[in-house]
Length: 168
Ligand code: HEC
Ligand code: HEC
Ligand code: HEC
Ligand code: HEC
Image (cartoon, rainbow, N blue to C red; front, side, top):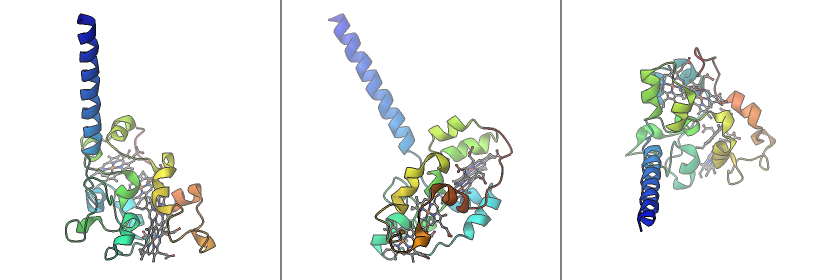
C-alpha cells in the first residue's frame, strides 16, 4: 500500500510540475515592436524598411500578415490589438513579455534562460518561418521565382544584423 501511494504521489507531483512548466511557457504575451525599439533601435530601423502592408481587413490574411494571430496574447482584431499588425519582431523572435524582463535585468543573460521563456533564434527554427512561407502561402515560387524559399538567404534579408556585445 505504502509503495502504491508513493508512486501515486510521485505521479501527481510530476503532473503538477508539467502543468506549471506549460503554464509558464504559455504565459508570454506579444508586446509589439515599439517595446523592442527602445533597446534595439538599429534592428528596428532596418526592419521598418522591409515592406509590411496592412491586410487586417480580410480574415483570410491574418494568420500570415499579423503578429501572433491565434496565439495567447497575439493579434485578434484591429480594434483590440492595433499594435500587432504586420510581421513584427515577435513573429520571428517569439512573444516577448517574459524574456524581455531578463534582457532588462541583465545584459549578459544566459541564452538558455531567455530561450526557456520563449526567445527564438530564427536560424534554429526554419519551421517557424514555414508557418507563413510554406505551401499554403499565396506567394510561392510556383507563382513567381522571386518567392523561392532559401533559408540562409532569407535569414540574411530579414533585417540588417549587428554583432551582439556580449556572449550569451
Ligand atoms: C499562409 C500564409 C499567407 C496567407 C494566408 C496570406 N499571405 Fe500574403 N504573403 C505571405 C508570404 C510568406 C509573403 C511573402 C512572400 C515572399 O516574399 O516570398 C506574402 C506576401 C504578400 C504580398 C506582397 C507580394 C509582393 O511581392 O510584394 C501581398 C500583396 C500579400 N501577401 C497579400 C495577401 C492578402 C491580401 C492575403 C489574404 C487574402 C494574404 N496575402 C494571405 C503569406 C501569406
Ligand atoms: C507570421 C507570418 C510570417 C512568419 C512567421 C515569417 N514571415 Fe517572412 N514574410 C511574411 C510576409 C507576410 C512577408 C511579406 C512582407 C510583409 O508583409 O512583411 C514576408 C517577407 C519576408 C521577407 C522579405 C522581406 C522584404 O521586404 O523583401 C523575408 C526575407 C522573410 N520574410 C524572411 C522570413 C524568415 C527568415 C522567417 C523565419 C525566421 C520568416 N520570414 C517568418 C510572413 C512571415
Ligand atoms: C522575419 C524575421 C525577423 C523579424 C521580423 C525580426 N528579426 Fe531579428 N533576427 C532575425 C534573424 C534571422 C536574426 C539573426 C540571428 C539568427 O539567425 O538566429 C535576427 C537577429 C536579431 C538580433 C541579434 C543581433 C542582430 O542584429 O543580428 C536582435 C537584437 C534582433 N534580431 C532584434 C529584432 C527586433 C527588435 C525586431 C523588430 C524590430 C526583429 N529582430 C525582427 C529575424 C527577424
Ligand atoms: C530593456 C532593453 C531590452 C528590451 C526592451 C528588449 N531587449 Fe532584446 N536584448 C537586450 C540586450 C541588452 C541584449 C543583449 C545585447 C548584446 O549582447 O549586445 C538583447 C538581445 C536580444 C536578442 C539576441 C538574442 C541572442 O542571444 O541571440 C534578440 C533576438 C532580442 N534581444 C530580441 C528582442 C525583442 C524581439 C524584443 C521585444 C519583444 C526585445 N529584444 C526587447 C535588451 C532588450
